Length: 322
Length: 291
Image 1 (cartoon, rainbow over the protein chains, first blue to last red):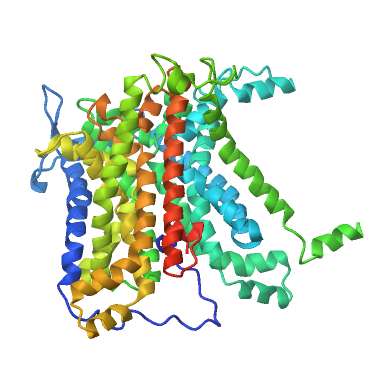
Image 2: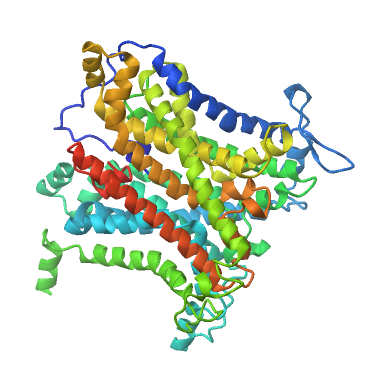
């Protein structure tokens, strides 16, 4: 995570405008820039843009009637829309086998993101602005989950939530419940909490980076001019931090849209499967690879708008872009 | 009561509530992992009840310990191999891309920049499935396995070095290389002898971040692994976590955790040492690219 991947917080009005660095082109060696950038650009075209076309060719391609293998069609003129239509007609209605998982994805991702923001904002605010000499230590501990494998963190919860795990032991000691709850078999709440646990660090860190850069003098000014704590927060701090809040919600939501492993590990039941599970379950099944491609396309279309918004908001604040 | 309102209105009161929330969060966030790591030292088979300390699951058990179980060892080495190879390919590519885009004005470099940012926010599953379809549907000189995994990981991680190094370049500005050129350096040698040394801390930081991120990766490495010989640790955990594993799985995960933390700690020390030499104050925050 890096501050360069975030939209800029507004500048304090007193601070002089940063000198523009884009006035002149670097002198000499007009070819040097393109030459150095070429391998990277070629790599992105080859392994990032071209694969998306292959997805299209598979989705709008055909299926071998005997071997059920995929026959990609490279020429857009010959594309058939049988597979996407099959997927679309099976979302709602009597054949709506895909609808529940899609709806569930929306509900899970929305709920988990709201919970993430509820947890992340106060913590990022505290560590960035109020923690004083503890800041370095707290920041290190907030960053630590980044470098702990997601699978290890889920494994930790599989252990805790197992039938004879610590969670059930703690509950039964209290005597409130018998303590034999099967947490790991198809409980939506466990999957949502797993998503929150997994992704909240990815929200705290960008929020921290954004809140750390807010100009303090504006907030102090609001308090000096008679605003109480809440109106200073609501009318000054919150509006200034909104771009960063939106960016960090996107940075958490988007990866969640493709998540299938959290549901697999913490529930494993079809009753909690998300669109990621639909992709994962069909992509290697003979004859259904095209469907997996169609779901990939669907998620891509849904996330396109937020992604473009994100790219624009970051590019705009990056003065170096021509 | 009046003391309570006085406390409430005291502008210098300590933010105890927020501090408590932060501490509770950190415990919730880190304790489960520490408990899982602790159970890798369990003497018995259980991952939920403590039966005494032993190194059985690391070394002692002649069949199922990490040291003696070939499948776990393979996973461990595959993870480290992918980490090293991806970092070696990704960093030069990303640094060159950053310098190139920094010097190049126009429509192509700005769309290349958008592409980079898109690759950063695209859900990983989508990229992994797309690359899987490429490798299974297009005749390529390589198949699923280490090569495919490295290609996928480099594509997914390229934005790290490119964006971190570009952010550093923006703070350096053009004056120094112009001065170097005024003193007779060619454009290329100005890059090599003036700009590149100034970029070393940013390059070290992004190399560490890429390495630590790659050894934790799951989605790309799973789809692009050909068979069980190229399945790294994270995939091993995913495959066995729900199928009655032994604490050896916890031991494997703990070793990965230690490897990542060690890489980050050493990288940070190197970064700080480099920063001291160039006279800049470096913090853990700037190391992770926060400022």
